[in-house]
Amino acid sequence: MSFLHNKNIVLGVTGGIAAYKSIIVVRLLKQQGANVRVVMTDAAREFITPLSFQAVSANPVHSSLLDTEAEAAMGHIELARWADVVIIAPASANTIANLASGSAGDLLSTLCLATSAPVTIAPAMNQAMWAKPSTADNIDCLQQRGVQVLGPASGEQACGDIGEGRMLEAEEIVEALEQMFNSQLLSGVRVMLTAGPTREAIDPVRYISNHSSGKMGYALAQAALEAGASVELISGPCTLAASDRIQLRHVESAEQMLQAVEAEIDKIDIFIAVAAVADYRPQQVAGNKIKKTDETMTLQLVKNPDILATVASRNDKPFCVGFAAETEQLEDYARKKLQQKNLDMIFANRVDSSELGFNSDYNSITALWRDGEQVFDKTTKSRLASELVSLIAQHYHQKDNGKP
Image (cartoon, rainbow, N blue to C red; front, side, top):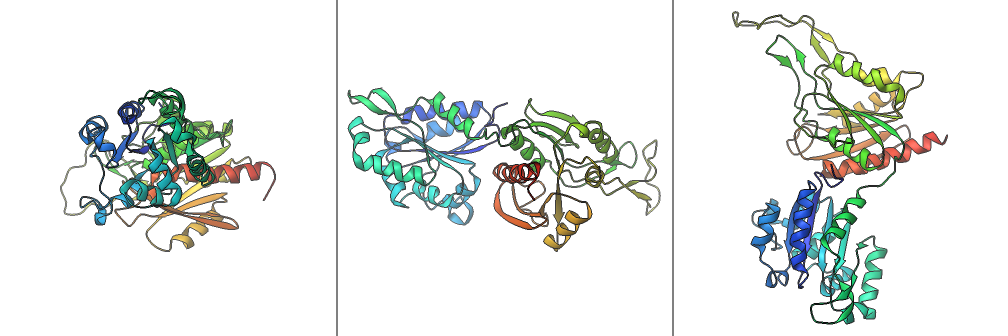
């Protein structure tokens, strides 16, 4: 499975004959499992139709700055939050100049200003335009601001000139994007995660569970893989797919999850407990389906093992990261868990909103550790996972090197 699997990619297409290559970029990204939305400038639509991009991306094409179909009619904000990366291919000399000047005159330039996702450009223009000092100054300006520049290539151009200015081939662009998500921050590190809910059986038909979808845990597993770690994922019941490079084991109950964790924990450097483990389970599980007879039914519940606390209490404990899903007093409850369970770090998130947390594709997190904290604003779980893994890697390496 590609590093681009489930990544949200906004492809900006600007005016130029190289726009025909952008169709191939979309097709290849989709083959890698990416989610692609296309933004076209007015000039781009003179070279290729929006319908072509809609057909290959399976998403509507965006071109209007004020989109009545978008949240609050602000399509640039919706796309800015959605994107894991923005790639402009082809990037014309005019678009490059607009980005360098901070212009916000159309959807694409405004989107680039509004997003916190990385922005990448693949320039395409006549060789004389590429050679101009003004273009070089604009490229230098963008690179200093963190924009990645792919190409251009050299060769024969549509106008008949020969020289630098050709857009890279679609395969080269997709390969470069894939490498963006391969940070190697955890190269050689062994990471175990738990994800999803647990199901605690009442009888052969019914069970106690919760609303966890597993999306955050699976996103973190993918982000750890992209950071170079070897990853083991112990998952409760959910329908998500994981990379074939992740060692995935499915379990049902909290006790089964603990057994799976303890079977491999001796080999683990970092343990990230994302699963929403049921706190209690029925004391007795009926052998047959319980029939509906009385008006009420009483279940006697007993406490489940605390998997994270069990791991964190080991003498040889790995670097332990927990999650605190709360509906009130977020930071207070999270700090208590951090201290009581002897954790290295905890991620606290509110789950009382349909826009965040369980089942949503978005989340916001407050990361807490012994003497610090960091707030991560609302973004996609995929992008958030990459940011959280970077933070984990930083603190893990500090501790591994003996720093407080």
